[in-house]
Structure formats: C-alpha cells, structure tokens
Length: 156
Image (cartoon, rainbow, N blue to C red; front, side):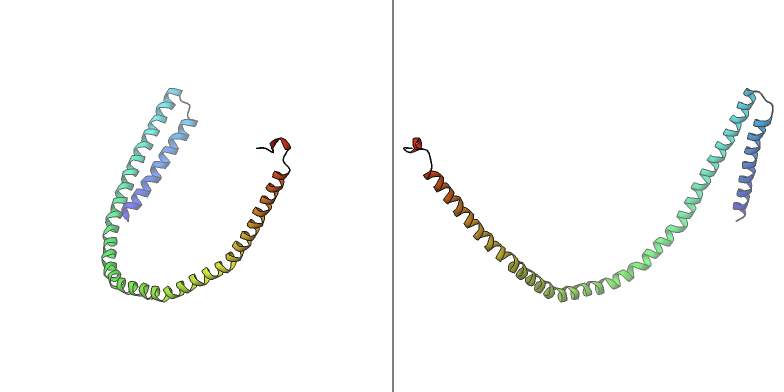
C-alpha cells in the first residue's frame, strides 16, 4: 500500500513540475532557442515518466497474472471431479428425453405428412385436370389451324 501512495505522490510532483515548466516557459521572457531547449527537456521528462509507468504497469500485470493463474487452475481442478460426476447423470437424462420424444416426433411427422397430403394431393389433381384441358384445347386449336391453312400448302 505504501508503494502505491508514494507512487501517487511522485505522479503529482511530476505533473506539477511539468506544468510549472510549461507555464514558466510561456510567461518568462526567454529566447526561442531557450524555450525550445526547455520544451525538449520537458518532453524528455514526460517520455522517461511514460517509460517508467509502462514498465510498472507491465510488472503489475505480471503480478496479477501470477496471482490469478493458480486460482484458475485450482478452480479447474475442483470443478473437474464435479463435471465427471454429473456427466453420466446428464447423459442418462438426455437418453431418457430422447426416448420420450422419439414417439412424439414420429407421430408429429406422420400427422404433418397426412396434412400435407390432404392439402397438396387435391391441388395436384386439380392441376392435372387443368393441364389436360389446356393440352386438349391446344390440340384443338392446332387441328383447327391446320384445317385453315392456305391452299398452296395443301400438297405438303
């Protein structure tokens, strides 16, 4: 805990130092060359602080990973026997459900096939009758057109 408090104090100090430097540059009568040098120094300080914070964050992430991974492995080890214990029970229940549902599915399938047959068969028969009528009408029209053909095609 003390390390985090000290780190927070340092962050506040660094931020104050940098902001003070920026405002000091803006309000102090210095040449452009001096201002650029001061600004460069501030950028370098920020860059160093960023690198420090990045390394610290990486270290913290590694610490957390090292703490969490054993707990996850422990949970996995503890859960595995439970899973193995309930697995046969679940498989049995699935089998029972399958046996109960199988006749219902067969019956539903048969009812569906009957309803489809009741609906489609009459429609097919009606379509066949209409098609036969259309074919017969087309034949009649062809015969009629053959009877009315011009005389010069008579011998052909």
